[in-house]
Image (tube, rainbow, N blue to C red; front, side, top):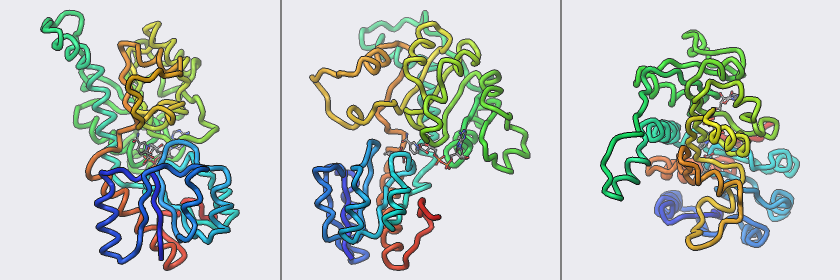
Length: 331
Ligand code: NAD
Ligand code: COI
């Protein structure tokens, strides 16, 4: 058995090497992402392990099948950028890591909100100038707010539990409500109802094309004045131009964004000293009431270790037994 992993970072490498030694299975580590240019490297392997937020090569699964690949294991949760139908048509199992650390993302989303509500960035910038005045930066508290959670899966649930610790009121929307949370009466029947009730809206749903720009100008117009938006889910869910309008008008008081709809040429790249040719992104990040982070909500020591180990375990399981709990393209 031989595996190949793409987009391998230095912080992942020890976990790959440890697993490879322990299981006595060769895992070739490639720093580059899986692209048309690097795809030939999969030749001679049984499993491909990948992690990227952008598109995979269009001909990936067709080529992979012809080269004898049995499983494509992503080291992350979201499968929005994987052509699952094409994988199935080519008899390749796709696995993800559904729960490497939901709390990592939930904690980060709350961190973004706290930074916005307590104007941490403004105080930090002032402090750098030796300006230690308070005025103009009065904060807000979470405990007297209503938090609207869209998507109450693993991460949404972890976020709810944190917000409850703050004493906040929760309203939630999910087309597949959790029975325990439903019994607690937190669900509303529609996103529109949630928009009307929530002071803060946090997105924890997956992104499929049908949900593109779920948060658009119409949705924003239905929200409370001065709403805060937090998105650690997927950039595609928010119409950035509409959000910018909302932020500029004051309708949206602040946004904490760990994802952005055109993020893949930007995030996790060193663009120091380079011109960013994305006017929408440039406009967004220049706004004072916005925090943009480069898709790092997942990025903790616990999560990184689990992402590597669990994806390797799934790939091994598919090769040895033909199946794994984390297959996402089962019929
Ligand atoms: P999950 O599958 O456990 O939960 C997703 C929930 O969303 C489910 O309860 C589902 O019923 C619900 N849902 C589906 N469609 C919906 C809709 N149209 N409206 C409202 N709810 C809907 O997934 P999870 O582990 O909680 O992850 C959620 C998302 O977070 C992932 O799909 C991924 O896009 C994103 N994510 C981001 C990071 C990061 O680093 N920023 C890391 C991991 C995951
Ligand atoms: C996910 O696990 O879905 C993420 O968004 C993390 C990212 C590194 C792909």
